[in-house]
Length: 322
Image: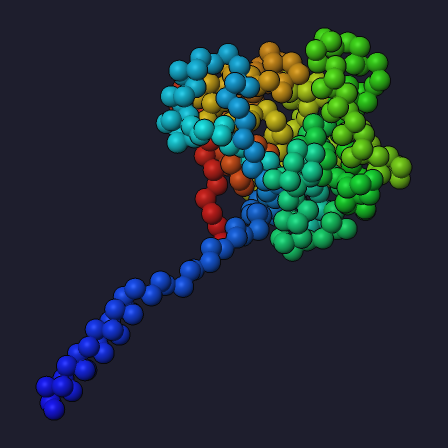
């Protein structure tokens, strides 16, 4: 009897162990990425970096850089990817204490559904679009201007939009297309249509304004940084503790254009001028230590520019602060 009972218990144990060992574990669901915003304190001003999304740029769009050199640089930074060179599209919300200023606005849906998160990330950061009173556009390329409106309605109904007079004249003058080579005219006109659609709600309410060099907007100094587009401007904000410069598109890659700053990109309207501007501004920022906010450097796109030799540069991102 004892032998039979022992045998039954042993058999039952084996079945239990077998069942336990072969039952698949319940799957653990992966979580979505958190909202794309980062808040940086610069003296009295709070700067909230807002991620619109990430994009991939073909290496062939970067000019005057041998393919071998390009891949060596990308490999050094672990940035050599089959899909292309990853870039951020960032915008920056600046709370000065008296004003809420948005610098650039992202691409919205102009380049596809993988972009267009500026508005949702702004809300996630604790602000509301109705609070924004001023929008400073570095230039009028769609990945900077399309985020201001949707389907003919202003996303920031209480904001006034500012861009340089030179920039507005270049894109909005109907005669400008005739000054371009035939092969570039169709692309130019397609860009113009996106710009016009984005700014239309603000023009209708007289909230689209232009400025010129020497003007100051909401305590931001305007700095002419042409080349990428003819009327490309950067914005400088001085605080008690530091100076922050919102540089726009004087750089698109934290790898190629820092190691080889003489490298232009296909999107530059005037590549020679764009390179000259980058060299001038990089040298200044490396010397003076301004904090830089850049729409196409890795999110949050806030950091400093360093140079050991005055020829090549390095991007030093800010350290996370809670």
